[in-house]
Length: 281
Image (cartoon, rainbow, N blue to C red; front, side, top):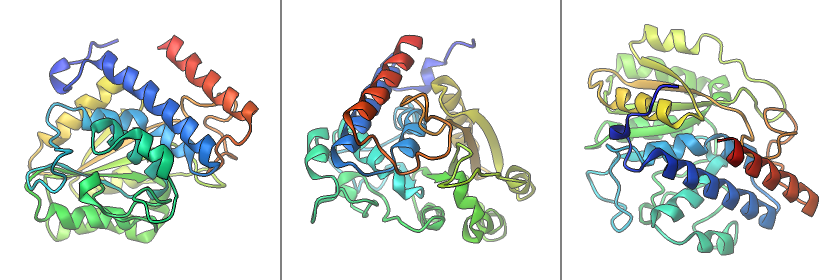
């Protein structure tokens, strides 16, 4: 295997791997506690999210979430918000323990979809699929830093998402706009075929990068290639497994969308799968 370029990361890769384990365990226990949430989607995004925020170029300040020179991370795949809540807790915007106490409770920042709050590092309110991509593009028009948007592959079954590829070409192409697609191939009740998405993006002069969404080294390299291209927006297609690092009997299969572990036996299977992944890494 090609050795990772440690210049691309602000932490040693093994530390990010350990953090990914801790984040997954937090997510499993959090959604077992609440008995709600889209755990499978969150698990598929862990390496993507952590590698991005721990890339050596990525600028953020938990003590000043509205810092004008920050790099911005928008979540369009809004049902993955528990991952955002947990990661930002580990980054120091607030405590992870607070997320466990307040998730989906009335009048708290940690609802079933993110509500924009820069103090907590939440760049956008989300809900309807496809909206976050446009929110991020609008901010990229004025932002000093890089703007990333994490979207699900299922969002590109919606016309507003697909049409963004054309708009960035015909209105104003932005070298600071980077679209990350979580390509786990599964929607709520069907498989997802992205069709000619990457070919269309290339035809509209996007830089298209294909990467293993669970390979930290490959992700770091792709993110740096994207930010170093000042002339084109980037589409980073991340191949992932839905439910990765959870119950191995459910990972990559239909039937678990929005269905977290609800019994003690369910929890045991998820934690056993997580431990299995740790031992194999």
